[in-house]
Image 1: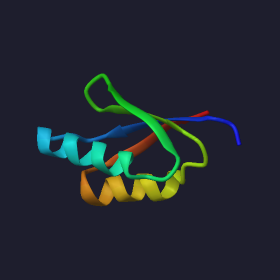
Image 2: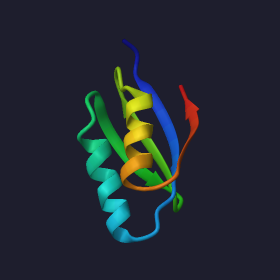
Image 3: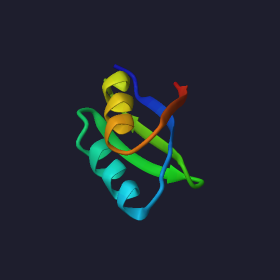
Image 4: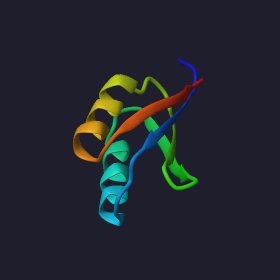
Length: 71
């Protein structure tokens, strides 16, 4: 399958939330790289990433999450 690039907006209140978000994304199957762009935009790259599960988990454990772009 082709490489996916996913951009999410995650509400980050503290450094603890930022670290928790990175651990969640890093532990998701199919993710090859991730980085924060700007303050709250998270860019995730990978193959066959389950976007719905990722967004739901981030929302539940970190804070409000919006899907900005998937390509």
